Image (cartoon, rainbow, N blue to C red; front, side, top):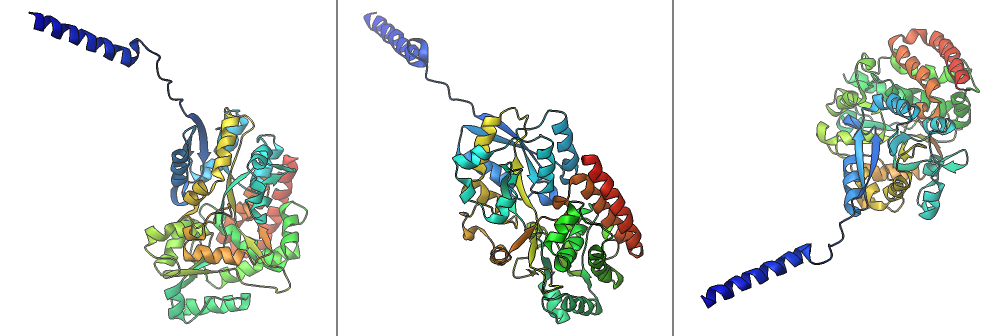
Length: 428
């Protein structure tokens, strides 16, 4: 009997100790703080998804105070939907955007918050090269945190070039000869998929920059020059020469950029004028950079014109009406770090804006792009990022119409000039 009483006493004592250790008789351990959610809407989707998933995972793994919650939106739909969200006063905490005229447009509409304090507190002005810095500053303030720097050259199928007995051209005359040889070999020289309009813009960008130069082009984009000027007509006629000679695939407006790029991959076409996001298709096409394909810059037309590289810079901006602006600023600062920037740009084809990202993260073609850009003195955003959005829409429509009716190019240019000036006047 005594043994039973003793055992019962021990059990009661043990339960009392366990109850106290569970918090019944002592202080409760502090609850872990929940991470602050920061919402991020972006256009990195579909064939243009880049490394946004890897960047988000890296950011969330490197710290625990904030959690970045991303929402991808269709690339084309994003251009309209984000402006609707901003106008409705219900934006996400952060959203991706294209440096240049698109950011300028929303800055001028007082839809974005400046982030100079983020740059200053984290010494970011020392982190980005001049071409990237150009895309960060608007009206004298910082509004843009860069994520990628892309470049637009010709990507070409090395096997097709070899079988046609041609090498990458350096001048426009050489380029036309290369196209003719490839055509005679039974292969379409140039693939273009302009269903979403924007892929055609590079065929005005480069001919205009190579003949009239960056200063004139900037005036045209700002509405200070006319689409009927001799400079624009000359550039357009260079493009028309390639159309008239049958160097493009039939019905470019029926294909998107990835479908046109696949034509190069399967040997149906020899080359395409496209951004370095082209490299995102390596796995789907089934080839390797520098082995199956390479690139060359748009040929020189007038050697007296200074060299210019064309391409977009993607980044993140802070809406003026963001719900968590301080948390969003902390996230912005961390997105400039080596970890997230490396994660985003590895395999995307782009160069990371952060100069401290290791070259070891790039493939051989990305390293070639980096070396080439270091030698080119001027940088230009592509047409739809250098022109105010309402006017850019007019131009993009004109490019599509030209590909349908190339013989009407002068009529298209006259109508474009009228419509662009009207669009610019409505902005003011």
